[in-house]
Length: 489
Image 1 (cartoon, rainbow, N blue to C red):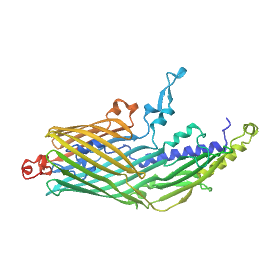
Image 2: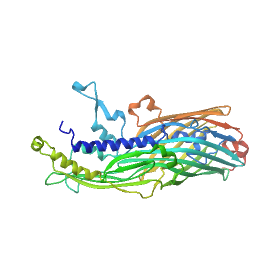
Image 3: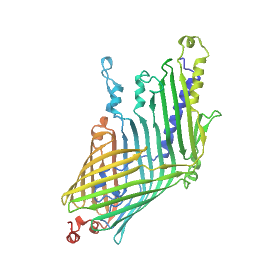
Image 4: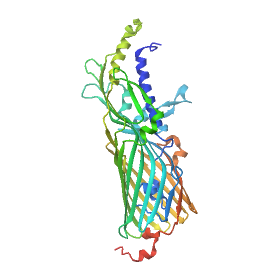
């Protein structure tokens, strides 16, 4: 093989190794179950975890205790680009019984910006209790937010470089790379009724960051020169890293290795200097006997990374003029490949600094309304706006919520999210004595038709709730005496 034992092969292997170490880093700082709060949870009456989406939520029980880990078990992941079904198709001819890549179909499915996403939360302790007319909550948890972005232009270069001739007509590949954060959250919440119609709530969150990888800037610019048809490539990368790892560089400021010192991980990250603050705000408004409005904003905050920060910046350019086949055939020392490898090295040369930096939480804004068709059934509409990468990402959920008896409620939902229009969800909660078991998903059809699914998620847990039904004054719909004293004009 012509690539055997030559520097170009080594450069390729170095990039593969860098990617491999990054995957290890994500696996290292992430807990082992992937999690994200689902939209279906928002209107599930009586499930305490609803407070994580709207801190104005008030329990009808005297007290709540969340069991460590067991109170909130989740598996949730999403891809906004394409599904498995979009990526492959059956071939033709002698490949009729085999799956082949369908690149043209993928080009039609992906957007300008695409994301692979996963959120993870491990609850360590959860409490909810009443003091007079105020509902207090407390929570301690470990959270991981992971996201990998890639632009739609990335796949366009498979068409060749004929469409990108001239410096003014380049292909621009921007916002490509990972953003991963792991942190502890200590939250204190309060919900209070201001009037018979209006309830408000808030949660103050103290954050302690454990590890972070941030793609602050990842740009690639490629075009074909008009006269020579040479390829011109420019790269610009800016990464921030904080955690129990050391990025090792060689004498030329090129990536060499990642060192993880597991023996000192506890002393390095617990406690640490990566302090942050967050806040959740929410409100509910009872417009009349049947109609209720909801609004909340969650994860509004930041983390300041001061413990073991590493900043990596790279700016490089490369001109590819082609390779001579005759020279390659007669060059036993692979000198042309060596020269090409030396040029490519400039693209992965990093300048390293150790400056502190800040990252923002992934903020979510919820707006919704519910209408009671009868005392045991209502219909609800929810809008969720997620804010990340300086962009707004929209999702909508329509749900029907049924509670025929006090110990059981059931929800059916339909969601539009991640450029997917076929997400049917379901949720239920069953209570017996102090125990409450709940199970829900935003995308039930992912289990039935996994090849066409862009999202997959399931959330379940076991809660302890005490004195339920004794705090019905939290809701005017459940309190007939209070209802008589209210003028809805």
